[in-house]
Image 1 (cartoon, rainbow, N blue to C red):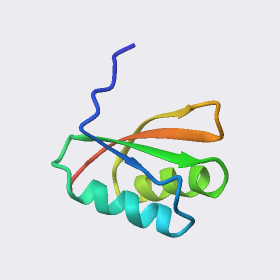
Image 2 (spheres, helix red, strand yellow):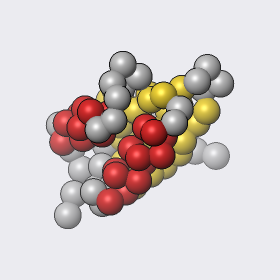
Image 3 (cartoon, helix red, strand yellow):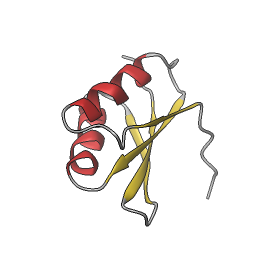
Image 4 (cartoon, rainbow, N blue to C red):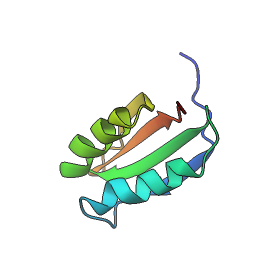
Length: 81
């Protein structure tokens, strides 16, 4: 499997919904088309909501990894319209 090259990372484990998506979206907006953002988030609402919201924004979900410490890392490629 190809390794994902990450252009930027953001840790939103200290945020609660809806601020989790807001912080992730701000970071995504700063990237160029095609760049990848790694988002570290807590289990629960963020894992349910952030990937769905990123997909609704038109971005490509590459992978969601369970870090096995109560957090997940979501890899998202920015797609501009």
